[in-house]
Length: 500
Ligand code: UN1
Image (cartoon, rainbow, N blue to C red; front, side, top):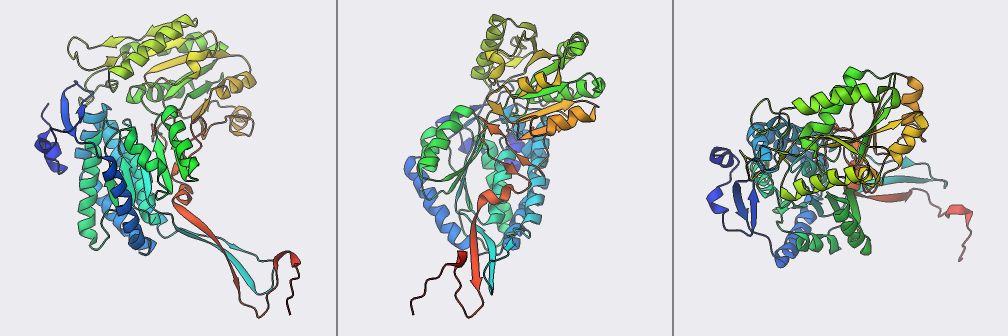
């Protein structure tokens, strides 16, 4: 593959990146992309000091002016959408359409953040004391660390970055070791926006490449008040504990085990399309991928037959080629996990339709797999754990209460949906005794969320919320202010404390 033009457009000279210790391979064919150098631990500490310095200046820039920088960044992203989308595909293996979609998600959150920069509102609160006023003020928080995964190498970072910058916080980014070049490209694009903007402090954005030793410098530093980490539950458990030790804040967006409840009143045509996109899209490598189909007994056989056909016929191949709907798994480790999960499913009584490796003769260094549909006798252990691959488990239910119980009986709580045309069922699913997930949808699949809503989930998903709604509050600190404009000093709770 010759990608030099794309790299050049994104300001990357690949010949400068061949000697580093982090060697990356494209999941598309296993070919080497390049090699970047890990940062050292002293460099990580230096980045934190730099960010603290940048913070002192940036927090004093009016928020709408900070928004202007993100507006310029969004415009640069528009110009580089195709190239950056291509690079996302090259490094992560997702379809080109999905790669560009990810850049669109970045552009969308930039637009959102620009508007937000004029809406960082606080409340005014009625004081119990005469001649007093209470209010809340939101201030910039400080340097933010973002730790991001390979599967959404740029969008998840940008959800955090765009909001953090308008909120007044410099960002230190530790990208996935599998996707360092998309991070470098984002840095180059942001640098162009900085030139257009003019006067900004240096180090508003810094990238640190490396593994957990770099992550630990960020999680352990009291100079980094917020760590936003997206990835596996195992990673989040370590990050969460380390940050908590120093009373720092976290936004954790970890594993998902997303389900669809398919009821007898559902529009089956719609449901089938939703299953196809959310179970097969991104080759099953989204946090929000559909992993469990909880299906009414009466629909089971028909639906499985319908899906078997789709699973057999879906076009798998090079994600850069139009027409393919499934690209590769990211690497061998991911493939092995996929295979061992299928083995485990069989041991636990599952019937596997499809599955297995494909295109290995043509592309021996890449890991393309066929999607697997697995009928399970019940929700066994393997169904309760997340395998980041295109495996859809099917379990049956008879009564809605039973379906809800199955839906909620997993450790993860990211996304969920119900397909129904029965308003009672839909509202029950959305109610307090319904889905326990951070995302609960009706008649759309669990994946492909818009940026306008808060994104994240409960339980082992980590509890964090990023992106839209009021997620911005994570990136700011709240001060409660009481102002006395009277000539007396009444105390709260009517307390008398008279020294005269
Ligand atoms: C992720 O997989 O970590 O809802 C993020 C979606 C995307 C984001 C997924 N907007 O599928």
